[in-house]
Image: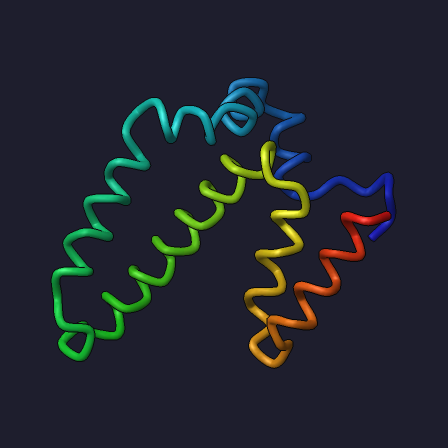
Length: 111
C-alpha cells in the first residue's frame, strides 16, 4: 500500500469530524460505558455451559469475546511487562517448544 494512500476509515474520518472523534475515543468509551463488563457477563454465561452443548454461533461468540479480552489484558499489562506482545504471539505458535521461546526472550533481555 502506498504510504500516502488513505485507508477507507481514514478517508471517512477526514470527511466527518464527528466520526473521527468517535473513532479516536471508542476504546476508552467501550470501557467507560460498560462494554468490558458486558463481555465479562457473556463470557461467564457461556463458560457455565458444557462446551459440547454450545452451538457453532455460541462458540464463535465465545472465541470473539476471548480475543477481545486477550487484547485488553495484553494492552493493560504491556506497560509493565517487556516484550508482552511478542510473548503473546509465540503462544499462538504451538509448534515452537517452550525452551526455544524461553531462550529467545532470555537473549532479548541480555541485549
